[in-house]
Structure formats: structure tokens, C-alpha cells
Picture 1: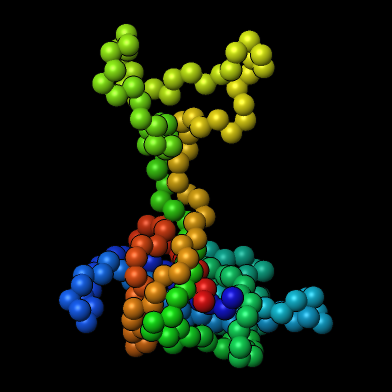
Picture 2: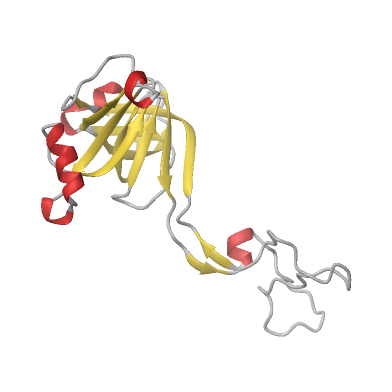
Length: 205
């Protein structure tokens, strides 16, 4: 699946030709620079490695700097490999948002917002005891019993309990491309995309 690396700008809404208000996400997609070309003969598979968002050499390792110089570009903050490009690319080529066409569907992968340590009501949708009056005092959001009987006398792995929530890799599939603004490298897709503002996302078609 070919694609691009992008940065989530934020959400907005636009009106379609029927006057319907459509929620959408604005993504700064590319331009991405080809930093390496994987081939069947050398690497055992065909792929194109893309770099996005310039970084300073001060914050990069010598390996990153040397890798970027081979492609004749600056050090990149985000590097991802893609397969399935129809066109052949060479080192230093730039791929822009024009790779996408209005009306087609794309998959967007990102890291969801971090929520910190959360309880079972927020994390797993538990109902709590609600308004029940079973001797409960100040325990409306407690998880309740978590173990079995005297056998097996342990808590099973995978039990839904409180813990860290968010910062997971999430893929949202089949988002329709509403607009491609080539002069500003912007891609507008219908619906929501995982991650906070200015977080990196991967768009595949």
C-alpha cells in the first residue's frame, strides 16, 4: 500500500453540494523525500523509504546524518517504508500530496491521545453500581470483584482493570479524501484521525 507521511493539523467541517455539514480532519501530507530504495536483489523485498519533517543535525546521530546525505537531503524526523508504488523512484525524489486523488479512500494510522492512568469506567466502559443501594458508600466507580472462587484462586490474565489508557497505535480505515490542496500540501479527509494536533500520521491508499 503506497502512501505518505503527514502531520495532523486539526479538525474542521465543510459543506457538500447538498448543504450537508461534514466533519473532517486536515492533514499536512508531505512533501516526503525518498531516503532509501529497497530492492529484491539487495534487501529481499521492494519498498520505498520516505522521510518527512526536517530535523536539525544537532539533534541527529551521525548515522542519521550520513543516511540523509546519501539521498542529498536534510535529516528527517519521521521515516517510514511504503510498498506498492506504481512509479519507480530514486534517492532524493519528492512525493507530494498530489499522490492522492479527491474521492478515493485512504487508511490513516496514528498514535492515539494519552489519557494517563484511568479507572474501569472510563477505560472499559464499566457502569459502576449506579444508584443501587447495596450498602455501597462512595464506590460508584469501583470495579467490584475481580477473582474467581477458591479454585483457581487467582486473577485471570487480561482482566479488565484500571491502568494506562491511550498512546496506542490506531488505524482508521476507509476515510474519503474530500480535498487535496496541492499548493499548501494539505489533505482533507472525512471523519476523525487518531492523535493530538501536530502528531505524525501515516496515510496509505
